[in-house]
Structure formats: C-alpha cells, structure tokens
Amino acid sequence: MASWTSLPPEIRRMVFQAALSRNPFPTAPVLATVSREWQDFFERSTFKDLALTNGDLCTFASAIKGNVFRLGYIRTLRLRINLMPYSSRLQGTNESATNITQNNRIFTQAIAVLLKVLSLWRGDYGGLELELDARSPSDCRYFNFIHELHDDFLFRFQDEDELFDAVKRFYQKRHEETKNEWCLRSGIRTTFLNHLLSLNYTPMQRLRGEHLELKPSLIKRGWAYSQVVRNLPATPIVKGLVIRRAAPRLIALESLGKIIRESFAALEFFSYSTSMEHTDDKERDFLDG
Image 1 (cartoon, one colour):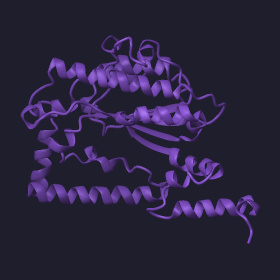
Image 2: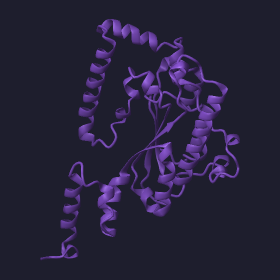
Image 3: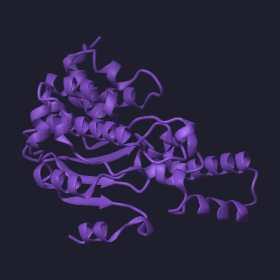
C-alpha cells in the first residue's frame, strides 16, 4: 500500500478538497491538526473568510502572533463590535453620557487590537477586505422587525454561487416571521414600519445612538495596546473597507477619517452605505472627498 507521502501532490490535494467538502464534520480546524502539510492547506480555508466579534480579538491576536503567515490567508474579515446592552425600560430613551463613554471605550479598544494585529503583515501582494459593524446585542431583541439586524444576515461563509439563494431564503423567512408576529396586512405593515423608521421616533434614535469615536483618553496607559490608540499603525494589508447600511451604529467621521488616513493608506476601495435621508451635509462632504 502506498504511503501518504508517496502520493503525487495532485492526489493529496484532491483528498484535502474532498475532506473539506464534507459537511458538517470534520471541520477544517480539526483537519489542520493532522500534520504540518494538512495544517497549511486547511488553515488557508479556515482563515479565508473570518467573522469575528470584539470578544474574539484576543484569541485572534494570539493565533496570528503564533504564525504571522496566517494573515496572508485572509481575504475577508468581518468584525462586529458588540456595544453595551440595554433593557426594555431604556429602549425608548437616548443614551446616557455614561453609556456613550462605555461604548466609545469598547470601540477604541477593539480598533486598537485589530490594527495592531493587522499591522504585523509583511506581504508584498494580496490583502484583505475589512467589514466593520457595530451594534448593541439588545438591538435585535427590541428591533427584530428590522431583518438586517439578525445574525444570519451576514451570510457568513457563503460561496458566491450560493449567495443569491441565501439572500432569497433569508428575506422569505424574515417576511413570514414579521407577518406572523405583527398580524398586519401588507399596506398597514408598510405604513407602520415607515413610521417606526422616521427620525422622530425615539426608540430608533436609541438604535442608531451616538456615533462612535476613537477616544485614547479612555484607555489606561498600562494597557497592552494603549500606545496603538495614540499612534495608529499602518496596515497595508487592508485593501478594501466596507460599512454597510445594516450596521445601525456608525463611526464618527473624524474618527473614521483618522483611521483611513493613518492606518488604511493602502486602501483601494471603500464602500459606505447609509440611508440618504439619514445622511447629513457633513457625511455627504466626507463621501464626496
């Protein structure tokens, strides 16, 4: 019987691809533990499309520091920054000064860790697309009629040829759930939701909240990434930046401009989607360059 190492590379790659296509087990991270050769192949699949929360960033940092080459495997990195939760009692109120400070601290810490890790890349070609999204975990609970707030809206790890079917199934499912929950006729439901989405509806202002700001002053100097916040590192690996309309909480333009100017200098494309009726003159000027 031929040994594994005696098989031609083409045959071994076919075995890898066949193993990877098996669903749901074994997973790529498990297969990567078999040997060094298996690790190299399956980590490329594991790291190709990453969807992280700010709670995952320390683990992500450790994984990259253990092998910086893993950065080169990433093509899409989606980071969701989970902000402070709130109760139903606070749903109809604006954010307090304390809550705003806490959210800015969470945002600043997440950006600091992310930029530090991405700055470790030393590749000559390639790069990744970064998608930023910030929201409170309470948003989906109290605004579940907004389809895009649901976790499965990101269609994580969908192949391109499966994406359109996934989008169709997602909206069909959410449409039925919303219709059954509200028990409203189509026209009445549309009028009702338009009212909820109006600028004058206080709970929607809670959903959008205050724009997030980089605040180095909120970070203690003894923290491992405190210097990163004060001197943002260059991250040439970031070739694309995406901020979708589905993200309810936007980044303050001054902070976003600082990040792009100091860290994303190698940016090749920038997609910034927001509802025009919610876009003020300052945002329009920013987007117009």
